[in-house]
Image (cartoon, rainbow, N blue to C red; front, side):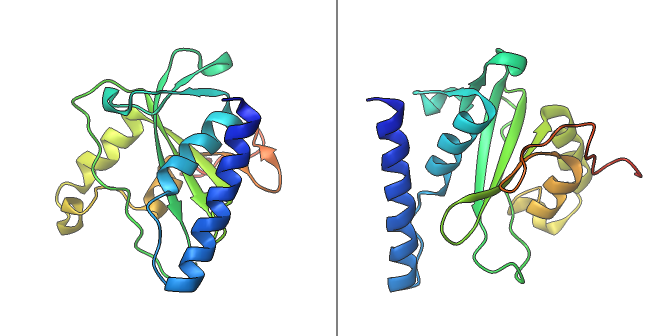
Length: 168
């Protein structure tokens, strides 16, 4: 199937998921598939066909050969916090993780990237927390330890322009 056809199908899936939520109040479990498609397209990655390998995509270009896990979260109400990312599997090989934040229409508005090492440190720090059983890292924490790499308004974010850890 051509890339154009896949992108067209993903856009239809976004529309259907959004309409379904508006009609029923329930969400369809489609966020992760959309996130993988979006990150692969935007960040120049190749999505894997075997989701049992432990990672979702392999880098091309400047990220050539790096293995990435991709997480997606749809934010329906920005006033509600506490979104968590679930457990990370450190017993399998991967190099980094992307987090795609989507709006209520399942359209990405920000993408963050963090290395395995940064995430391992965060998980080690959170092991004393009761919430770590539900997921060791929140979306807010990922945004702090990760790096903003793309926004809907600006596209790819140059590391020299923005650094969320400059004053830490």
